[in-house]
Length: 81
Image 1 (cartoon, rainbow, N blue to C red):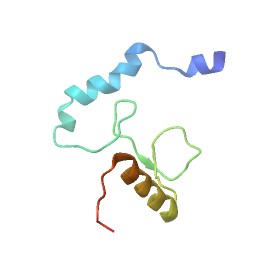
Image 2: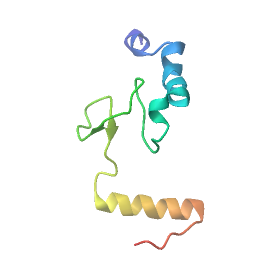
Image 3: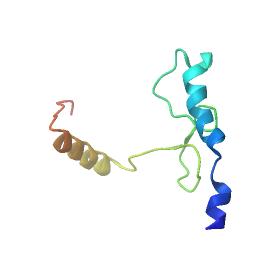
């Protein structure tokens, strides 16, 4: 348990991303990105890495399943296939 606690961010560190996202002029014309550690998160193909944005879904069959599940769950159907 101590190892987990040692890797947690402090309250200030945890809030820093949100404060930066809300106040940074660098993000004024940027949308639809993930942030981490006061920066735009990088895309990574390596699923073993603990940081970065992972590419999901991992394959087309999973993507179709997830799309259908979302339509059923929300009751909204999008005819874009």
